Image 1 (cartoon, rainbow, N blue to C red):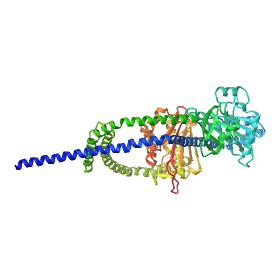
Image 2 (cartoon, rainbow, N blue to C red; image 1 turned 180 degrees about the vertical axis):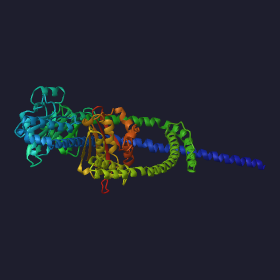
Image 3 (cartoon, one colour; image 1 turned 30 degrees about the vertical axis):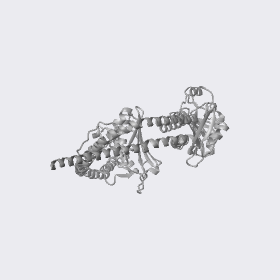
Image 4 (cartoon, one colour; image 1 turned 135 degrees about the horizontal axis):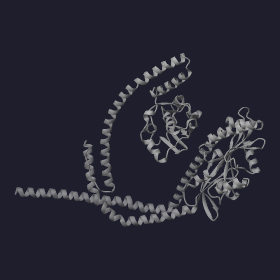
Length: 628
């Protein structure tokens, strides 16, 4: 009797447990259904109803923000390009060769004139080595004559007399400041040169002009004019794909068309029709519209302050209206499909969700207890399967990180010991070279004294005395010491020039960050070119970053080798002074300032190689700017 009662009691417990599980299952199903309806279907219905009313405004607002930012970015790019050209024009106008030619043109003999012209053209050629947009450089003299300094000397470029007078008068009015003036075929003298430019679609041009001031007394010596191919700007604007029928136009304060992607609507160098100019200049918090050639455009503008230009983006309104209609239809299709699939999605979701989630929770509890080797198998491609795989990957990364920590600790101790050992020989060698230098001074061996001095400076920086960040002028000094040593090794070493902006001298840079780049240019770039090889090192402040550029006119690098150079160890590291190659510099910059920094390489085989470094500005006083 008692046995029978026990069996009934056990069956009752199992029944209650089963009922409890069934009730939990029903509760979960109910919750999933309610949450799906309230969280997906109902919000989608509400969203669709509201979106059909607000979509038009939203599309216009988003397009306005995107287009306005695009125009601002384009204006900033053009602004930087113009600044760069302005710097080049200043370097040319105030170079010794141009100053001498402009000041003494009428007093020079034939031989002196040929020499002065050759020196001036060489100076300009060096400045414009990598500036393909500059086609011609002319010197308009005070006596009304013209000297051709760069370009096609056989068929020179000429403007009409009226255009030349306008150009030179504008330069004189600015008293040393520069101006950019647009000119089209109608402003040029007909002839072979004009026909050639029209055939090559390069007749539209911009003339960068500035008066040449005498550096001694400030008097005006003439006008320097640089002819820029308008295609350099127009082609880059056409390459921006922002929609069908979208046009760009830039005009100056006088209403002249400077740049345009549609010569039928606007003509370079010509005045924009007054009715169009008024709409382009209109200031309105709402959208500005322009009706032209049976088309309505929405106008977005930005100013280029250094050239007194306004750049405008003209977006056909039909593009926006077509996008709105597409979104209307898409909303309706999504709503209909969602309502039809709701029931099926609920069933599938309920069926595949419970078991994987329970297994995942058990695995998490095991991992929380210290078992990092637990694994869950899942072939599901849904979110739960992704969560399971992410959990497995997380445990794997944790295990790998623990192993890496152990490996790093071992490597750290090994590196510290190696560093202590490595300090002995450089210090001993430095002291020995110091004694040799003293002997050279005592024996009046100036060349050996200078060579040993440069080598001692390099040894000091290689020993890593002081902070890892040093002022740029010290780093430049180290590079100059290295270059001096290389020049002593060979009498035909390349010409290495330094162009450092004054404001950049006190910026802090990582130690030994430039020497490997110059060494790479010497070994792999201009090796074998002798005195015809040229290397330039430039450093300028670009907004909140320091830009350092090393350029050589050597063998160049093919595009398929650039990535391998940055990420592969150099094969000839034993030949280097510091043993530091481009991959080391690249990784060091990324470790110091983030993945967004590093080396940027631009090269054309048999022409040039340029390596750029962008780093946040860190001043010697301790203040630094945020990384961009």
